Image (tube, rainbow, N blue to C red; front, top):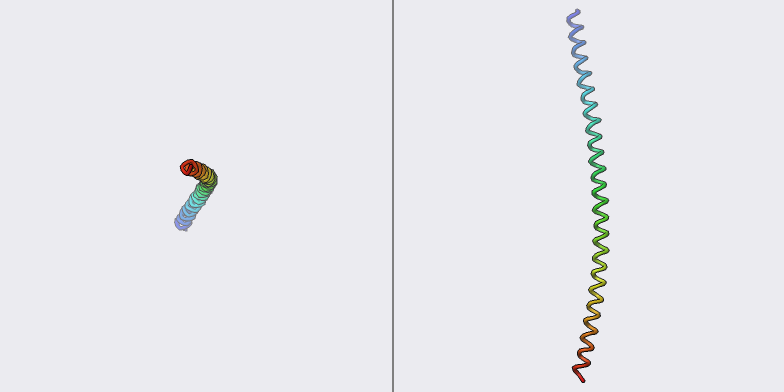
Length: 85
């Protein structure tokens, strides 16, 4: 009887140790997943900021291109007037 009780006690102790180890691993895994999610959110925010900056730069470039085109058209008009005279 003592032998059976000691075996049961060892088996119960082993299952308890496995359960505790799994709980600690699960907690560690949860922390790692949260850290990865936080990092992903930071990267997403950074990408959104860069996209906004790129859009603003594109708008400035388009405005500059329109001004350059208008200036070129004005120069061409002046040149044509001089050529007619």
